Length: 214
Image (cartoon, rainbow, N blue to C red; front, side):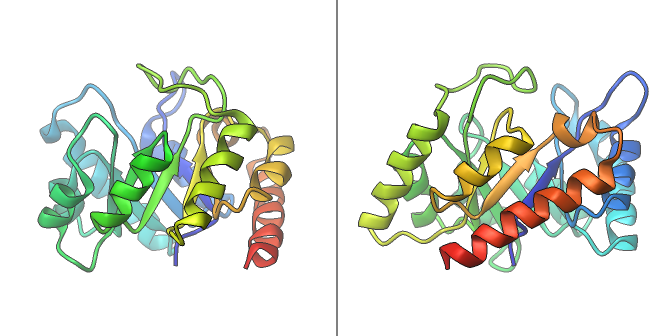
């Protein structure tokens, strides 16, 4: 089951990835994506192993961004590949059929290709400008999501779509009404003073509408 809330880890001057993951899990997040950029696989592996221990303790799913080999090595729930990285099909060849494989998308065509390649879900974005990601794809905005979700419905493609990219709490109701499955956030949770209350609010917004959509 794909969660309606994905937390994307980020390191801050005050806290490492594992600290942020622990805080997110403690606040109630059940789906964690470890996203470390500009590092070697050798350096990412021990962080992934530590993140897996934390996620297991909280019964949260751990997804490793970009490195399916590491996802397999630490027995994570899955992996996620970006548009400029390997294809979902290539990642699936490494992980095998059982593991979750997500792919980044910016267009309906991206989603259709990922679905054909056996993706478990897609991360569609960015919703608005975000500093978290370098080489940002074109901003979609609410109208972009509406248009893409309509195209998928016309083609009877029902893969879970997760919106991502600078999403704020007040954006969620309108986004969920487009027919998406859920949202992925990083800064929203990382920077929250009361993470548990925020996570509860997000789940209330996403789960309510997800039931409505189905």
